[in-house]
Image (cartoon, rainbow, N blue to C red; front, top):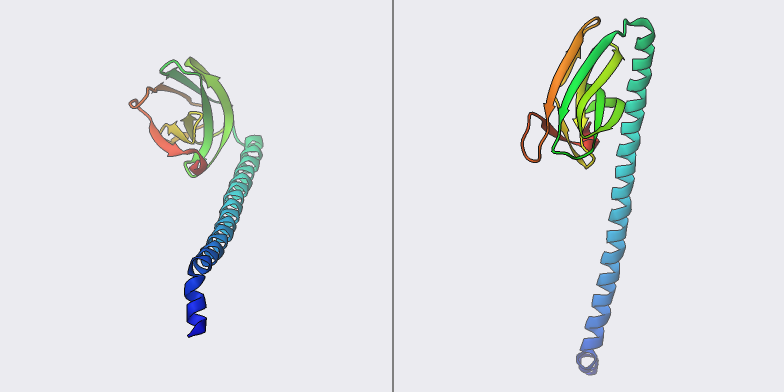
Length: 163
């Protein structure tokens, strides 16, 4: 009985001590989850970089044996902002940028492209606007008109890390 009386007398201290332990435990677990998440993000970025390097190496190897004489002219209309314009080779989800330009409109010319699948990604944020993927064939000239405005236009959207 005396034990219960002491417990009752010190109940606030016991509760504070228990809550402090729980808060400490949750804080440590939160830090552990953060570390795991950061490692996962770093691993995904490393995997993406490795995949891009492999695609880039394959593109350069093909460039030596393919007839890389394709030209691509893009007429760009933006909402006046200076944006990054990436010409990417491959598919969305499995691509790499071969040319990155900054532009706020006008004509962009890409010369000496090899046969393959290309698309354009425009934007500086985590979300970018994308054109459809097109198959380019040797000896052809391609043109595209890209109309980009805030909220509307003839572009699709993708998260940058999924390109």
